Image (cartoon, one colour):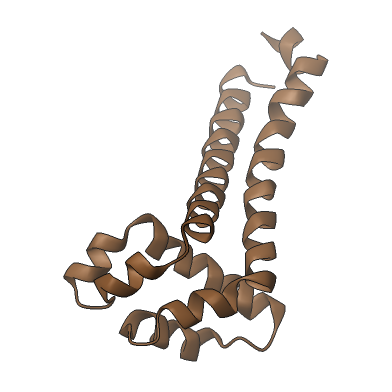
Length: 129
């Protein structure tokens, strides 16, 4: 099995989670630059969004990135936030579908990249390389 870890396949296997995960991070970064104002305008009455905006702010790119990352969870799991009264259901429906799809895709790319990386490191440790 150690022959595999010294091949080009191993290099591709170990590089893939970074490519996948960082593409999700890049998508969130682009959305934080281009679409955050639209996202925030969609949720004018939602306590969760207001609280996150006050907590992180929107003046710097890192703050916008973190805020957009938190709001991606809203796009992925809105029902939990609605049940707790932190989101208005109508406002969730008003989120533009293209932005919602991008947020969900970016979140899943990050999650898959991280899971793949944990798997790859675990396999590397198990083989003793």
